Amino acid sequence: MPTPKESTADLILHPVRMRVLQLLGTGRHYTAQQLAEALPDVPSATLYRHLNKLLSGNLLEVVSQRQVRGAQEKTYALRGGSASVDPQELASASREDHMRYFTTFLASLMADFERYLQGESFDLVQDQVGYRTLPLNLSKAEFLQFAQALQEAVRPFIGLPDSPERTIRHFSTVVIPSPAASNPQEA
Image (cartoon, rainbow, N blue to C red; front, side, top):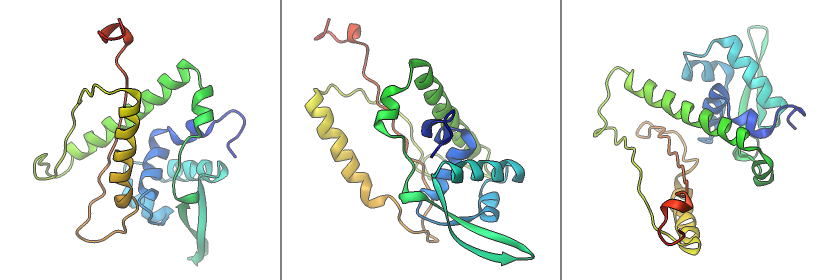
């Protein structure tokens, strides 16, 4: 379990740890060396420190070990196949905690997009990159139906194995209700 001063949300919502968890969230297992190759901008010492935090927080597990040049090479996987914050933990978080979590999430998303733009070439149309905000006027029941349909649509594509024709694509969602004052039905 996480240390008393560091919640699961704090463990997950760190820029480097989020990137490690995103890679492992594909269902693939990685050694530290493979993670270092996938995250070339993260210094090795930093990567190992964050791997140890994720291990001690029970978010990762070592699925195999082998001897390589006098050292034990560990292969890591997500414990239970995914890393998420317990709804009770989220419910008990303060406003300041939520703002910090959301800011970290957005900063991570922005850093991912910046790395994409800094690549050798980029073509948003060819790479099928998109971002937008769609206002949906939904009742609570309709929103629940929408959320369930979205979850069912995404589920078959989570954890597909690596292959030469597949690219890891980050699919992020943010759902925020408009303030009641801006909703004419509730004013």
